[in-house]
Length: 534
Ligand SMILES: Cc1ncc(C[n+]2csc(CCOP(=O)(O)OP(=O)(O)O)c2C)c(N)n1
Ligand SMILES: [Mg+2]
Image 1 (cartoon, rainbow, N blue to C red):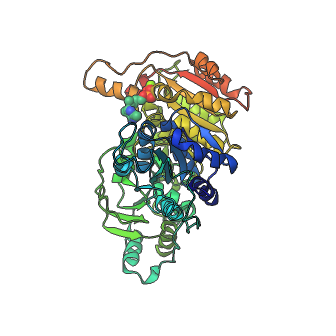
Image 2: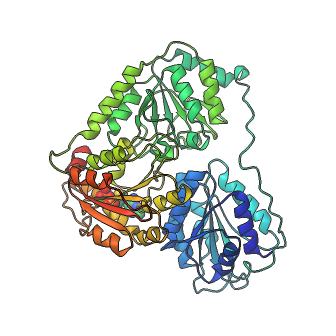
Image 3: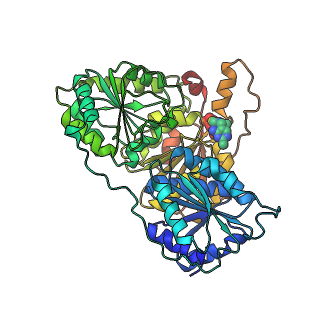
């Protein structure tokens, strides 16, 4: 078995179903090994988008997303996606080719030092060798998946990929640590937490991506119900509690953020459940005593916590639910009133008779079934989708709120469709974000998948343009040309349509459409609502 075959075999053993990438000379052996093992290779239009597809696959499955590039320009193109997975805390295995091992130390053409290039944006940057191959892969997998998960970058040199693997027995490591039940009743910190919760009159839970990774949804709902306590979620954790649950109380740091922060300020105890401060866009402003519940200690200290309960998040939340008795602290009506305030604020600033950004979010939500996977890009539209889209299950909304790289949502939607072909997928993107990655429309068409791609067309990098106007600066360097998305989509093998009214949008969403072709809907919105909101 050569090293490439060993790599493919270990990816198979791990349950990986796709490799996303863009090849070069040193990738040929890896491609051939994947072909022989019938491991699908998804040829993206550039490495950066391939990596974002891998990231989305990692978000959806919890297994490392796998991407591949050539050396030099391929690896440098891959850096953005690896960094995105790094700050979004998504497990990833990123492979880049390299010149032969003997030439690497001195040769210059296309040779970058991958160790130095990737070290700041991954958990481990390493290289594979025949005599250590299986061990390196085992360590890479375990490192990528261990809390907090993230990317591992593996250099595969041109002379190594075809060489016989000497260390050739890949043993799949346990992918999660055995979580022993906590001795909650006898633990002083736990008893302290239970006492504080029992004494609290206005507690709230702030749930984040750690709770999603820990599959703690049920425990979270149980704690909310047993306390009678609202749950605010971080954007990437949307769906960790069904947003139609009576105790769901909004998404943090998206649209209407002051309402959410003020609501939390009024609480007398906060349980941060798997909340990762990487999702904070604004500085922490709460003075509320906080209990940090996570698989890791609160080493970031972006927010202070008086007490830390570190371990299996679901088990800790269950134990808190069981141990903190007393009457519900909030009525369901009080939490419903908060949701109603949020909804009213989210709708503010619309212009009658125009296609407002929230009209687009709401019409799409109304037209698509509960099990839809939504991906959102980065920009003004994301803030409204983040608050306005009703999520029903964890891992059903994919967005990047760690690195927050534009151009994420289209590749993520393609990956979502490959991972879950049976579920409807909608991609929300700004016109700026789409322009960065629009070549991938041709990939989506080639794959005969049917994501719905909804583009907020405002001819602007609105999020930045608004910041200019806040300072009374003219819009300069932030305007983009209008694009005929109907023509663009068609030239890429997709269906396309432009709409400029709610009625036209609803007609398109209600019409029967091809199940083997993406549909691009260019929504010509009136951006005035953004200005009113942000
Ligand atoms: C790769 C990248 N470049 C720049 C930014 C900074 N940025 C954040 S939002 C934004 C504007 C996005 O424009 P568009 O996609 O049209 O969305 P809109 O704000 O108009 O809804 C920019 C430039 C970023 N987040 N990522
Ligand atoms: Mg825009």
